[in-house]
Image (cartoon, rainbow, N blue to C red; front, top):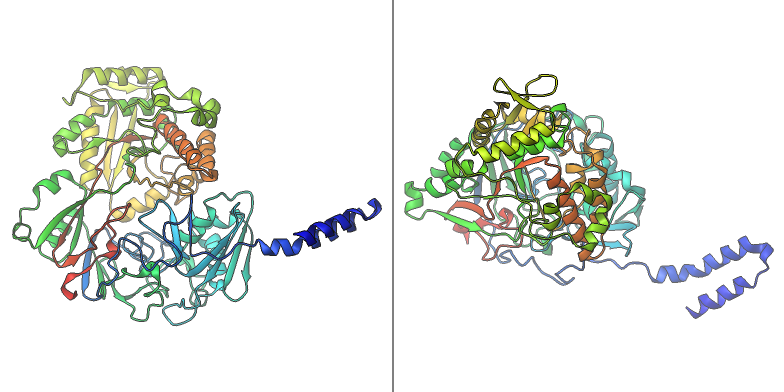
Length: 621
């Protein structure tokens, strides 16, 4: 430092007419200092704060580190598949589970870093052994593990990373195709490093998204010209499993790769424990459950309260061969509901959306279909400090909202707003009267038993459903709306059509679930951001384009301190609730899973709930 200051004083002594030379000399004097403060490679990165595990960690705390690998597991899913590429729209309808699938463990492709399920948003080294970044997160450098290899034995290289981001930019679906818009420069550093220098479009989460939410693809094994054409040609990956057998639309069998490069790195100890994983596809949930009862499927996640309470009276459950277990993750409620497609003119008016929401008789639905097992969801981050419900807006929030607070009701600002409730009779006149009043404010009136707009056109729309469970909820909604002259049709479509129409926003209303984490970030732009409104394949199912919502997303993405982050998410939650983009349904608060007794699990479950990739075949222990 003394040398630099002395050199700087010398530079300042140069006459003013050589000002450019003086500045150049001063810059050169600072080079040793800049080098000295370069970021050191680290083993993990967190969105806020520091990683909970030190650089010497040996495994995640929620695994069984000494598990004996072997045996097999049979998963069952409802639907079908006709492709092995989940990253493109063209030629892709439904992709086989496991290819890029955190629930099953990203069996084929891997990201640069992997997420700990026991922390809000912390990543540890996977394909990238270490990572470097600065305090401003103006850049991130991933240092590829020299041991990382593709299934064919070819090393994973920085060139693969660069190729991946460029390929997905040119041929990928949202959000993969938009990642490089935040990058000013992408370059190889040394033998194993790849560095991204960000521009003004990046935010503080961008490095973590690059690290965890982008699959790395093999440059040597992919033809960019045919990448977006779909198909069932078996890809080359770097993950712990290879595809052993493929029956299009019916079954995929995955075999554990005994030469998997990452089996001994700390972030993978206790994972990927089966020799074989079979995923079988069923056309109906009832057929899948029958296969589970017979032992053809080993694990059955259950989301139906009536089913959970009443369906497990078969012999294997009664004699203990099948067990039921409820997990309680420390997560916000999320949002399941009927989603309005606001691209449709009939749903452009928030008053119409509020009126339809008000008419929904959740209490009757909950009593009649679910035995009062569920709790109505009031906001997107309910049951957490990030949620607006139960938490009044403080000065920090109000400052963030600015003039947007004027479009929020006093109840929403106070955190006391609740969805309209009924007496559960199925025809609560008070609730329906409130809905009719709101329709009147939007220019509608009931005439001849029909809800008509100012031009005399009846209010009519269609709900697209995917399965019997959704259809039952829609029928209950249809029944109530009919009482006030609103014509709601229901169309249940097959999985392929549902996927295609969801991608192209070809529906009036749809039932969707929005999961909520303790670290919401860039994924919110793909759900609710103006830039994703018209991007086919995005998750902006409601067609939202609101500058105030965009501002709140930017605020939560740029927040450095936990209290600033909390204020931004709460303000964001309030705006989503006030927009009535969704008719909220319910949340469970638990994860229900039934499994055959030969499937074992670690003793502890992490913050995010049970993790299938850490379970194992108890018969080989």
